[in-house]
Length: 156
Image (cartoon, rainbow, N blue to C red):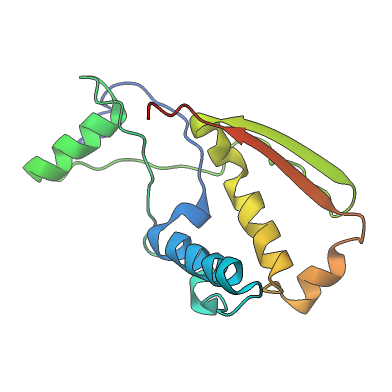
């Protein structure tokens, strides 16, 4: 959307993954690396990063396709020229993944399609690391299991 309120281009829908915000992603990686290196969780997650109150800012993780009419190219151009463009973000839209607190849930993802399940995988990591609140942990049944099959194309 331009400064004068005109829509530019197509309206698109994107997947949100909160755990890919830079500060949360780095926090998860450091905590999980401490567990891999030592065999037990040596570093706790930073609780200030996981508040549920509305925030004034949010981050976007975009795959850059770099075609002339692509959204990532438009955002990059706007940043480089400082054109003060405004982008309208709405959500959440659509259905949730519908994961229940019991049973075995299986997910398949490839490439950027894996983003759909990243917050669920991060939530499972918090469960395993003992980082959920007592209230959240009490809601999870003993038979809860999440299996995530993921692949991506690697040119190397």
